[in-house]
Image 1: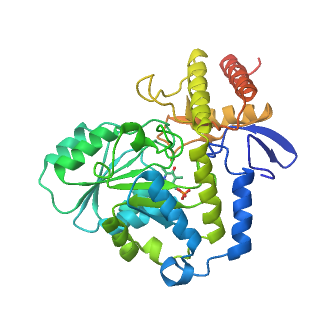
Image 2: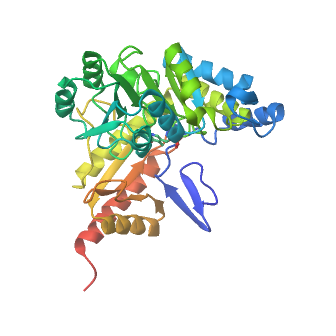
Image 3: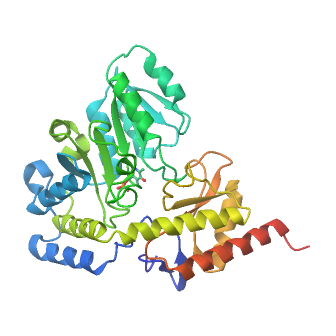
Length: 375
Ligand SMILES: *Cc1c(COP(=O)(O)O)cnc(C)c1O
């Protein structure tokens, strides 16, 4: 990728119209974000020099943690270098041998890996279906219990039944961790994500994990919750303790992106409207997508186009590339067998003509594939 920002990317000499990035709000190359990064570099240099608890924690990190706490309406937030590391750190810090972890079958790989690393007993319930979980929780507890879910599922683009999960967690005295990598900045009246959409507070969902490399356009992650949770993580999350703090300049860039996402609600309104349009028109073409819940609900900017087999997904993607589009295929093991797809992602930076072109190309490719190879 010679140029990877914005909807028009360049691979070697070819320019492609991309529906492939998680930069949902179009902030990754926003001048104010880039400018804040520059100013941070001038002030702090390139790297942090050490882990947070040694000498790596700068005023820039502190200001970002405070801004994230304010944004999420939680007492405290703690930065992690990546979302993958945040999930590993939280889960291993709260659970170990003898404890139990319950996960949605379609949760992100990092949540599953954290669970494996914790060595706890774990069970996965069918996607979005809490009835089995309810039965499991009715059994006597054998230790700490942790329920874990994506807020918006990264490959299906639908929302977890968080009100039901929160109610079950409360009844069973279990922890609830929500990974809202794809909801924060995008869903909710003020971009507060899936929890804001459902009106769930810190009591209902004590552990909120968010990433900074998606809607906020930079890199990194955080966990937000009560002071006691954050203190626990600072003392026992090994992926926080034993790694170099992210560059302070990056924290400055992220703080600028967060401020922009709050000041310009049109970005999330636009990307949600584009996603709703693409879902609707894909269905009208007779193609298969997944509609997340009631039609009046929010339509996250991840629109899967289900095509069946892995080869079919590859063929769709290649035919689109020939026409000048970058739409990545997603195949097993990332998604279950027979559920291969194109993962179409939208951004506030797409214009209406971009969407028109995509829909025309999808219709043409569908026609070609149906017609089969020339005789
Ligand atoms: C991207 C993602 C992560 C990992 O975040 P990184 O910062 O990229 O490591 C974790 N959970 C979900 C649901 C994600 O989509």
